[in-house]
Length: 166
Image (cartoon, rainbow, N blue to C red; front, top):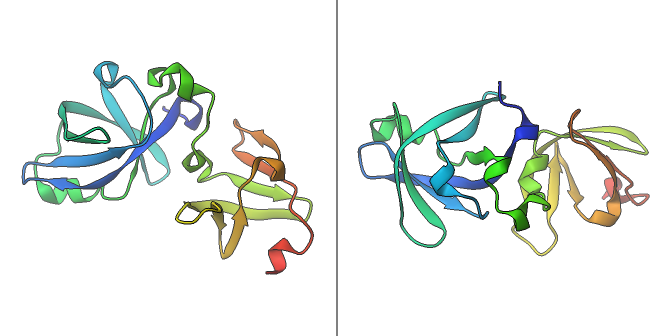
């Protein structure tokens, strides 16, 4: 079984490509594609590997991929918008020390007020990146993070008083 500790997010599926099940993947991390046998997707809370049948680069950030067993556009559509993960050892050295904020999706958020819930998504559409926890928007900043328990998937945060009342 693949665990979240073994993988890192490297991009998202942005659309299908053609009619034979190929997918366009926008990659935002530097990793060794030649050594990558499979991409991992979160399917109903379980990390599942999908083996790469073939791939080609469309441009510097987009890769066209066809997976074993995904043979038509209908099957490919199930992957739209999904985060793409690879084994951490495939990341280039400069990236291994950095953590993509998408990594925290699924983490429980603990504050001085107690458990706030689980990170549902990350909103990086503005200059201030936000964690979406239920109906709460929490700014993400290193100074607000007290600790991270990667094994238990808990993000311990120290939030300013009144922030959650906004």
